[in-house]
Image 1 (tube, helix red, strand yellow):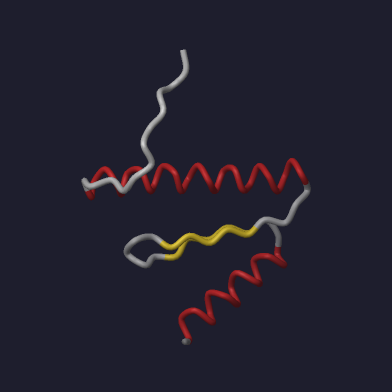
Image 2: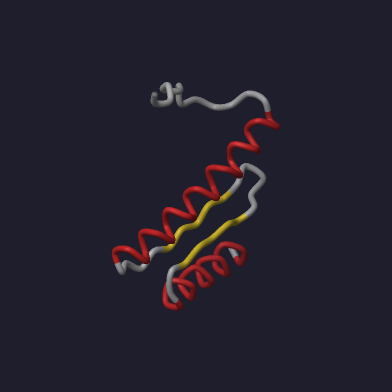
Length: 77
């Protein structure tokens, strides 16, 4: 039996919202890594949390340098 559908809307409880963010962030990082490996693609992923914290993933050195440059520009503005 499959899972039921959920309504996509903002989670009101801040603790539940943070737990969901953490779990889904880890899931999307895993998917990005799998996509890069399986399809031999260069993948870059940047996520900002609601508190402004930056999370990033890059599948190769070239993408990593792009993410670093973007990160540097973001904080220098």
